[in-house]
Image (cartoon, rainbow, N blue to C red; front, side, top):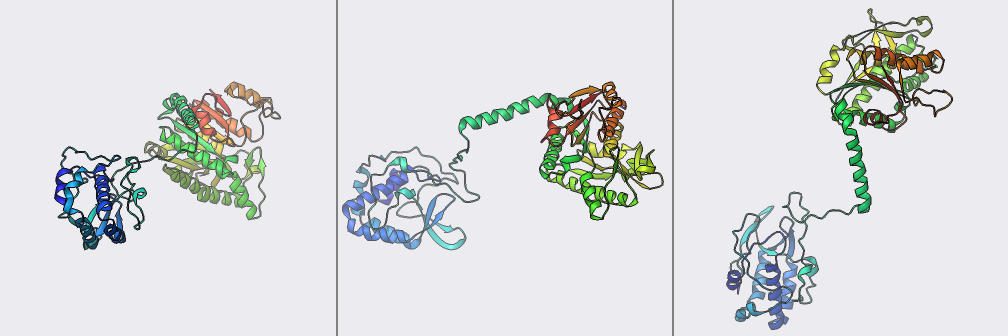
Length: 468
């Protein structure tokens, strides 16, 4: 019977139980049920006791040599009339010849029943085992009853392998939590956004943009993460961002810890010797390195600097030094340290602490420092992220936002008193940067998520843009 079966039925055996293997099992059990039902009840119990291991790589069961002997005994019960085997008709799984194909390494033919092929069990070099096709779990019946020969081919499916390095098999996609129409609509919306951003990406690709980061956007972890991700995205699409940061909220917190009450005059921090020491420790040692770490975690590379490094910024005392203390002005910018960093694709992160010619440290307003750095490196755009929506035509009306204005217009607003407080140094640094060659300067609201992307990659923008 084994020889006839091997010679009449030939074909590849894949990872899943083939029609041939299922047909052989069906015929075998049908003959057994007709001729030796009592014997097969006992033999089937013995066989089920030895079905131990399931090879997940090729969906076969490794049965020990002892199990093979029980199978041979049960098999011999019907060998006397083996000629009838190939005349049995199974309606749901008809026998058919398959074209001969040379077996590959992944697809080996069934071994002969008279001389079963042996192989070493993986992980147990000394144990020999016989390879049998394992039927689908739906086809396995309790050992106390005989299997039903009327198998339904539609129920036979490949068994998925859970081995980490298994061969490729049937892949089933997980069902989406969204309805198909909703998922398609969301995908189209994302594609539309990317398509609309393309002209702006092309315009600013390879251009340097200086971003001053401070205000409310530094207080909220969510807004901070939004700004960092926007900065990294701009870097990934070809822009060259430079981040200049303050740290007002953090400085205030540490000053209160040492018992010093923060004081401001015309939007500038009053900085005595103790305050200057705290400012330098917080800005250079804490905030700067924290931002560098966040940028690295977001997938880009950043280099932390302060105005003292490589004499990037040289300071002098403010004209109002008697009232402000160690608040300085920028007298010179040496951007030579920035050029190789920017050219290498890194993001400079600059804390606004500088020194004068004698080495005395000064606290530089972050808006002022950002404007001077933008002019020195020939930036395309200067962006000031603050905790206000922009320049308002009426300071008492949040809805009177000025979307765009030129230098003459903003100077007139300052003269009329419509711009005051902390907005004055912001406007002045924008005007100075534009006068030195920066193309546009924008004051944007850091409380709005992704305000940086909205300003650069959309027509509408956010905040106030000042043009030369």
